[in-house]
Amino acid sequence: MSAAHPAGSFEVIVEAVTPLTAHVSAFRLRAVNGRALPGYRAGAHVRVQVRTPQGEDWRAYSLVNLAPHTQAQTAPDHYLLAVRREDRGAGGSLHMHTQVRAGDTLRITAPVNAFALDEQDNAVLIAGGIGITPIASMASALLAQRRKFALHYTGRAKAQLAFAGELRALCNEALHLYGDDEQSELDRFDLARLLDTLEPAQPIYVCGPQGLIDATIALATARGWPRERIRSELFAAGAPQDSDTAFEVECRQSNVTLRVAPAQSILDAMLDAGLDPLYDCKRGECGVCQVGVIEGEVDHRDYCLSESEKRAGKVMHVCVSRSRAARLVIDA
Ligand code: FES
Image (cartoon, rainbow, N blue to C red; front, side, top):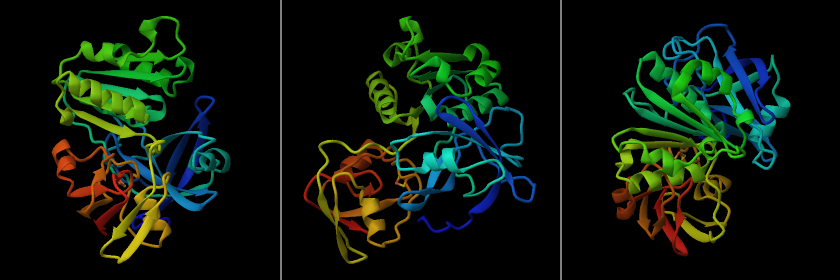
C-alpha cells in the first residue's frame, strides 16, 4: 500500500467532530450514500488518507464501538474514530485535528483486523492512553457475549481519559481507571501488581505505547504466560533507538542497494527509492511487509513472529526490524 489510493478505498462523510479531552477528538463517519458501511469486529482499524508536510499519506485508526448490541459486525451505520493530537508527530493527527471538519469528505480503507479478540471468559484488557480505542470495542464485544472480563485503563491523568464516562456506564465494576498523577498508589497503574493477581491462562489484550506493551510481554512471560496469550497493538510506530546506526540493504529482486539511515526504516528507504513494497500497519504487527532474508543478521522488532521464527532469521518485517550488521540482503 502506498500513498496512492489503495484498492478498495472509498469516501465517507464526516458527520461530527467532537472534542473528548484536551488532546483527543472523536470523528463520526458515515457512508456518502447513507447506506451501511462494511462490518467489522472488535480490534479492527481503518486507514485514513491525511495530508502531512511530506505529502499525502495514510494513518491507521481503530474503530470504536461503545454499543454492544449494534450492527457493527454486519452493517454499521457509522464508524467512530478517536484521534490524539501529536504536535511532534509526523503530521497525520495534526491534519485530523486542524483540517477535518463536520461535512468534509475523507477517503478511508475498509476495516482490517490485526488485533482480533477471541470472545472467551476472563480476558484482561489493558489500555494506555489513546490505546483505549480498540480495547473499548473489545469490552463492548465481550459484554454482548456476556463474557467476564476486566478492563484496566491508564493515562497521565484520570480526567484526560477519553471515553471514561461511557466506559463506566458500560462496564461497571469491570472497569479500573488509573492516572499517573493520582495520590494513592492504588489509583496509579502497577502492571506487576496486576499480573500478580491473575492466572497465566487468562488472555491479555494490551494497546498503548511501546513501553506498556514491551513491559506487559516481558513481565507476563516471566510469570508463565504463553506468548500467544498476550496480544498487543501499538498506537504509534515504535520509536527509533539511540543506538540505531545506518546500514546497507540489498533488495535482490529489485536489483537495488539502499542506505538505511539511523532514524529511517527499511520500508521507508524502499518507498523513498520508488519501490512498491506491500505494507499496512508500519508498526510490526500485521505481518504484511514480511520479506525473506537472504544474507545478514536481523534485529527483529516486530510483534508478529514467534521467538523461534526470530531465531531462525529466515524472514523479517521491514517496517520496524533492522540489520545487526553493516549489510543485509533481502528477497524484495
Ligand atoms: S507493515 Fe505491518 S508488520 Fe510491517
